[in-house]
Length: 364
Image (cartoon, rainbow, N blue to C red; front, side):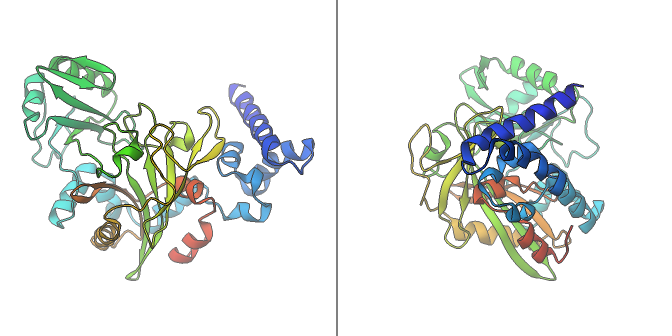
């Protein structure tokens, strides 16, 4: 019953949003179109709103990728063994080291049950061992769950005198270690990495905080023919520690990138967190730093790095890369073999199904 009520609520919200955009349509049409979209194309009311279908003619709707059918296709295009290096953060970091690809090194693991292969990483079993990870060269650390995606539960911690600051807390090393144990009680454990910083020109676009905004780049490599499908920059807003977009519910925004020039378009973000009502941002909502027309530093180097990285794992035909641009150049954060397309479609305001189908040589 609760699921049905939520579903009805979603359709009502989609129709209510449509009332603000579809001035030429009748009241009945505004509320009927989200239902018709689901019945005809399998696209539910939340994605109807997320992709601004209220402003798009119906013939463009089927050009948008729906994540689950697309992810099913991606799993068919490569085997579990071929995807293993992309799915395991420790194996991926090892692969990057072996192929001289700039990436974030792993410093240690916190886990109640040690993973089978630690790859010579120290197992951090108590607060004193965690204190040993902090040093003058790495006074700030980044913690992310081994098997998580979309930055779930990820956070950074910074050494301040004899204490540590993380999230909205300030405590001891012992309290930080206890927090990690508590948060990972039902998880595979934490990977500990040095915290990096964005290029100094990008920091005003990230609200001026310590969070790192990353670029999502989708690539296809088929029969040695390489293609960049699209790219966008995730932009941090507010007190968020990570840059995940979460269909606009995180409060963060994201901007399309012109692949040829590295220049950004206006960012897109949701006016509300409970429901996607998308609007443009020519400037960062906090710092007023210009977004539209901003050219990313090290863009040609970023494209070259991602191509070299994909060719090093050519058995996987398409990948979604997350790359951070630092003062020292681009750094690969991770790659995903079953990536989401929604953030590209939101930022570029068009469907990516035709270009992906052509590049992959298959339809779904």
